[in-house]
Image (cartoon, rainbow, N blue to C red; front, side):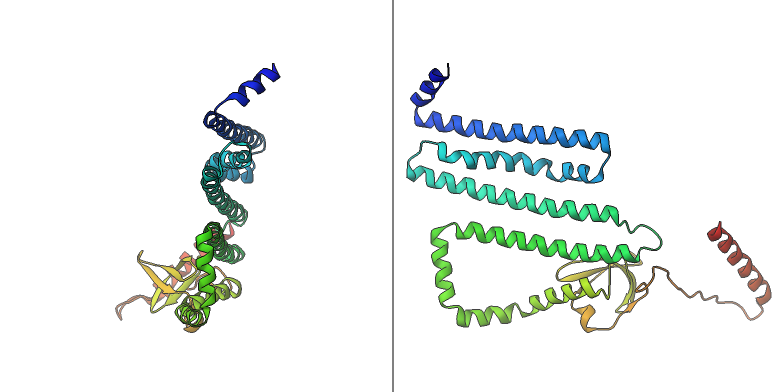
Length: 293
């Protein structure tokens, strides 16, 4: 029986043989993905583990492409193709595999970020530590994703012989070009370095309350190049990230999440001040009883 199957396969035309190999490789990848998903779903049902659930959520779709492409890439040497056909097919599969591998790496970074966000939830009264960790994680995630994208693009471009020659020619004339690029990128590099400084020295953090340019609001987002401040009336103040290194600003939650405010009562001269003080004392007692209770 096995010899008959081998004879049948060997007698197949090259085109049908290659299609069969590609089909079996893709099918193997999909079957492998199915079994892995069932295993993770089983553990998610019996353990109620947040990490397992976020892995399923983040990697479900990328793995549907990554594993079949991985199997197809491994099966390419088994195909019967002439070099003029094999080279472009192999190059296309490698490029697609590289892209989806980068997507999987980005999703893994997202999994780690979600896990730490879940562990250090900052939706509580005293969230100073949580805001510190979240600020660092958010900045590091953006830097890592940028590096993954740049490295992936570099790998894809360097896989083409013509682009490698262009790159070598560019490196030969790097003198003047390097100076021009350095001057053009000086501002961007300054913002990037300012971002690192803010992420780890932390003059500001996510959810900090600031007074900047006469505006009061909370830090909503910190990117590689700018900071988003959510103003009290739902406006957004966008500031370059190096603003918080070069200029003064007020941070009301630098060492604590508690806020101190001022209340002004505009009254007539004949207002009963003693009765107002008595009512204020009564309200403060109610607040203290509510906090202690």
